[in-house]
Image 1 (cartoon, rainbow, N blue to C red):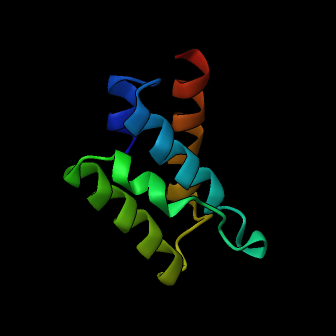
Image 2: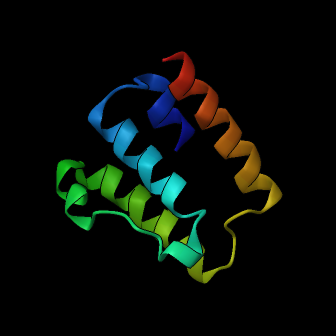
Amino acid sequence: MAEVIESDPHSAAALTLYALVNTLEYPKAGYLFKLDKLRDLSPAHRQLAYRLMDMIAGDQIGSAVWQAAKERMDELVRKG
């Protein structure tokens, strides 16, 4: 995931995936993400999105690995 953002932090794919990552941290808000945005992604990037969504079921959101990856993505998007 971070590789997609790192390669072009302001691309549509990077920003869409980054938006998804951010919404996954808010379960009480119902993980609000416009699913029609998946249409804007390539099949490979959609697979990344599906794996991210699957992390909800695996209760992996917020783990140490998640936090480290999220911090890296935050940094990449901020620096652009």
